[in-house]
Structures are given as structure tokens and as C-alpha cells.
Length: 397
Image (cartoon, rainbow, N blue to C red; front, side, top):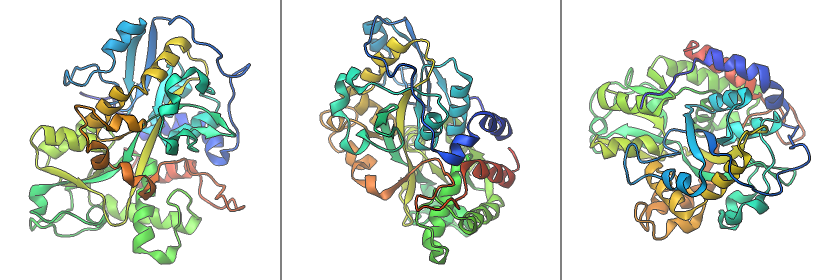
């Protein structure tokens, strides 16, 4: 399960080449020449997908989780997957080209739309579109000016994962355990025993914490930060830097760190929590009092996709209730298709509630920060500054 690790210096250069203007303005939208595809023909024999770890499974890790093999048999479309560890890596890969689809989170999807890297989707060619959760069908991270640029896939929170032995029956209730030096219930300092996400979007986690801890800053949206608010978040991250053992962006490496390296607390995805618990590790997760950031992922098609027919076949397949339920069980996420919440053997009848189906309104979903604050002003700090300042904080590693 070893994943490729990208230097943020490299990613920042790629970002600068193709998406800085889009991140700053967020005003342009792409359109496929001649409009979206009007019919789905015979498959081309292949489809390539850039995806988060654990999102496109063929049973290699656990034979119960396989939503690729039957699709390949039914369609003749051979699926290849490139695992990406961050949204910036996904944007860079889609800018390079050579891939058909990407499972983009909200902090990547609007950049891809603005940068003209993904094409409008004809939802009339997706028979299962009506099954999509109504809260997602017209979500702003994939719908621009009434046009859809993708198909919702899964969503969920960025949880606080912790080692239950270190907290000795006293689960953490605040993100302070990863932002401020303190003695944990096991009598040891948290310094050198915590992690933070290795991505510029993590600035929003700091801003969300400050929204509760320092109300005088006036933070309303952790992705729409004035200069003073942004500077406060960056300063908090600088302080946190002295506590960090490792910044993570590789799910498998974070699992190893919690298993072998003595890490006891970090922001994480439910996927890692599930893997660690599956491996009998003393790990649990909580949603702290300050709330959480989160992700709502959309499967989007590259503007020059080489296998558009197979891509459309996958888009339809991605909404299959069994796939949706199996994936939600595997990743610890919430299905984009509510029907998947009932009768799925792996997810169970209460799996959707456990994974946060009713917490949608409580999550600050990832989105690309832009200068336009949405109030007629353009004094918010845009994403390219989040990138450069975050790299400076973590030392470019």
C-alpha cells in the first residue's frame, strides 16, 4: 500500500502553471466544445481514474470490497487507478492530462472547472441521477451556472483520530490536543506525538478552531479569511509546527505511524480509523466541539478524456446503491445515494447514521478559497497564498 509522496514545492509549481488565476478569481467556467456528450456509445476498452486511497477497490485488500471486477466484465472497460494523496496532486495530474476521471473534493473541483480541465456532464446520460441525495445534486462544488461538471460520489468529515490508550477513557473533546502543547491523560506531553494534514487546505482547520477559541477575530467561514484572520491561522500553524512529528498526506503511512511510531492524535479520515480498528489497534475518533472540516467528492471527467464512453459507463456505475453502500462501509464515508443506506450487508442499517448522514449541515466542506468573499468585497486571501504560506510553515517538506 505504499503511495507516491509528492513534494509540495513540486505541486506548488504545477499549481502556479495552471490554476493560480482560477483560484484567485473563481469566475471562469469550462465548457466542452459543442456542448456535453449527447449519447453513450460502445466502450473504448479502458477507463483511467485518479482517486483517493480506498475509493476504487477490486478486492485486493479484502475480497468483500470489490466494485471494479464486475464492472469490467459487464462493460469491457478495464479500470486503471492512480491514487492521489492530496487535492493539489489531483489538480496537477488532471492538468497534465492522460486520465479520464477524478474523484475531486471541493477544494479541487472548482479549480478544475475554472481552469477548463473538466467537461460538463450530461446528467440525462446518467440514468441513476435521480437517486442522488438532493443535498448534493446542485452543490456549488460541481454545479456552476446551472451546469453539472461531475457526479457526486461520497462525503464525510475530517475527524480527530486518537489512541485510546493515550487518552485512558477520556476522549478528546477539542482540537486543542493537536494545536496546543498539553499533557495527555497518559501523563505524557503531546509534543512529538501528533500529526497534521499535509495540505494547504489544512489552514481551514486552524481557522475553524480559532473561530471558536478567538471569536474576536470574527471568522464566519474558514475558507473566506480576511488578511488578519488568515495571519492568525498561519501563526497558529507555526506554533503547532513545534509539536508535529509528521505531516501526513498518505493514508497508509498515517496508519503505520499510529501502529508503530507512537502517534496518538491527528486529523484523519474515517478510512484510516476503520483500517486501524480492523487491525485491532487502540484507535477511535470524535467530532470535537469546534466542529470539523469535511469533503464532498465528485467524479469529474477530464476535458479531453480519451475514453469518454467508458467514463460515462463508470459514472453511472458509481451510483449503484451496492457500490455506494460497500464504499461507505469501507471508507467510513456517507453515500451520495441515500438508497444505499438500507439493506447493505456491509454497511448495515445504521451505518449511514454512524458515518454522519445527519451531520451534513455541521460540516465545513472543503472549497477553494478565493479573493471574492461573497459580500461584494475582494479582500479574502486566495488559495495560492494559502499554498505559499503553508509551505513556509512546514518547511517545504
